[in-house]
Length: 474
Image (cartoon, rainbow, N blue to C red):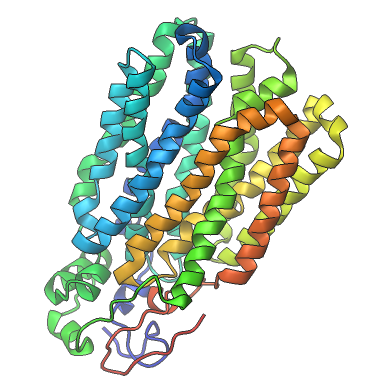
């Protein structure tokens, strides 16, 4: 390993230069695919429930309160899953937790499909939610800590972009079942049970991934395992002795209560909360929104197909445009400009209420906001917290940030049906416009730009290096 690389604040050699400077290789993409299949499942599980509950309302005679609770309970449970798994990652390691969260997704999906009443389904959706929350924290951190410097945004972003296929798969799969005449009594069970398949496919792969070298060295002080992990990823031999010579003394255990990192945490958790108010308010409540747009005469199949087309035409391309530009124009610009265009779109719908009476025009504007959610804060709020906090608190910070997002998602999924019903579609979009403007301000105030920096520089990590302490920069 050469001694003139960046990644130590410009003060000397990087402990992780082999990782930072590595070319994209098979291990990078194996990590991404292994993590990404979890996100396909997460999105499918969280959004299919909107169609399932629309089917169950007449079968189980669900009240408005029960409908809202079923639509939102997994999001609330994911808050706890993200916090718990995030903290446990910093205590026991990334690998120790990886695979357990998708195991919960498998268990929850299968059990949900066999539910016989409202209470059982509610309980099993809680299990799904805990798994989803855990997946948000573990997958982002592991991908970030294995990524190279030049493509880190692309790699983490690709993991999250798999959500787009999950969003698309839900309404498409539901449309097929509804169109082929499968009875409603069976179709909702198939929809829920299907979520177990992609999650189960990666349990083994997740358990086989090695512990990240940053955790083994920065937290455990295990130079031998660190050298092995670097070789596993890059194929480059880095001797344990060389690592030990570069790392002297004990590592600094940072605290999230430090004002420097607390400001960043407010930025990551707050922006994710605001984004998820808009994203899940629209996504989980899409059936409610489309029913308000098209009227009661529109069938469930019609509205489901429309939702699928919106995802396909606007949302899915947005994810991949974001992946392409994350390492070109930066996380910060993508995030604030996405929030700004969302605010503009929602604001137009609010100030020109006649738009809701013209379905095609409404759907075009609504779709554009979806594109800039994806080519905007939906991608970046996932990427940010895995990059801008030190190794010793990265899992905890990422978990809290994801939990903040899911608090917003829970509130939106719980309240959006009532807001649309009581205030109307135009005013509901106006509320989302204000939420999006707050996202612009918070991004500009609280968040740095990590593009092109080593993970240690991006996180302002202070380690006891033989070349001296680096200065914290934002």
